[in-house]
Length: 580
Image (cartoon, rainbow, N blue to C red; front, side, top):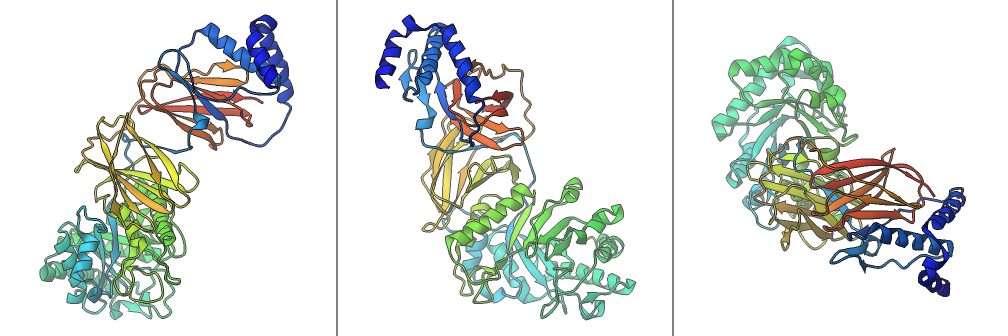
């Protein structure tokens, strides 16, 4: 066969014409088209040279003849006109391609937090600094929210106010809000909230007085109040009270909302906080216009369901918060546990458009489960640090922006931007083996640097060496079982929909069964993606600057696919019929 290769290449002009090669290939393609094989990702070859069309025809014809001979040319990088190179992408290490669209805005992030209910004495000054201080120190997680408990007898207590004061000492901007676990006895009967007018008005006044007393005694303006924690929970051996969705609607519409207005209370009103993320608890209030105007936040817990999207809340521009979740099984201090919770945070923010996320306790009050970010002795767990990969850098008011959700099987990524600080944040979660990333941020100014912060089995939210961007992109290797947050400071971005200007489209000329995808300009790196009409991704590759065309070859998939290219924020799409 090697002799056939040398013979055909050397004497090719004497034995076959380009037209004959086309005829041979047409016949062979008809035979191959009848075969049925499984899917294998197509290989890409990238051409950056400007060879004359005649030379290209000869090269293509040679490839056809060699294919008929039963073999293929070796795939290697060769010069093709001056400094341009023919580059075999199949010879490069695979990398997960991440594209960040820094021009479009999704939801606003209100923050990240946990609760101090019943554990005020466990919140030491040192832990308060670790939890809430907004700084650049390794290991500090920078929570921005504190959830506290309303006492069912007196409302305000100094013990519940103690963590509030410590949080504000660590960071004056911490958002503090409170939840009622159970109303005073006169407003409920055996754990069921009363529906009579006196009980509803009495409890509304009780919540108003609580907000006023926190301000009077602790000097703190509460951000929000929730009238009931888990109104649908099983009350066996549990402090709680059951409500119906209809009761919540009547209470907020006819009593609580008007009572806050009358007293000049500016604290936001939260409803929901279902133990199983049952949106039916809040739907009646949101579908009643008179009630909906008094509802400021929808809370939910994820113990027996969720996270779920909530289009109704989105349509009414109501913030949607996860206000409690934890592990209730045996204690787990592995990095895999931390990665699991990071994946849940990603799903809540990216796939459900939620605005805030709370773990349950800051410090566990039990010894044998995972209810706290710290164990019962105040020792931090890996899940605290993986939460910190979000909370430390994504501050209240940041906006989530589109990014490739899952660029590889075990990788999830998301991106956020803070206009007040000009900070771009990218969070990458790797649940599997070490993975190479190619991160592209079209339209970002040149000369920027990304600072990675790593949490894995040996690092606890620790700053790594900065990575310089080149042509609005950078590469990074994610360690196995890790969360890495990339922080890009001093990035001035104007969020808003970027329209595609009138530019030349991509070209896809055929060469036998191969297809050549050409972009108008190779001045900047670009990404090629091939997907089926059902949305299944067959291939995604980042193409370096200077390479203006890619050959799709050696494939086992046939049918109509979509070829997309992304370059400098511009997406171009073209249909393509693949045959075997």
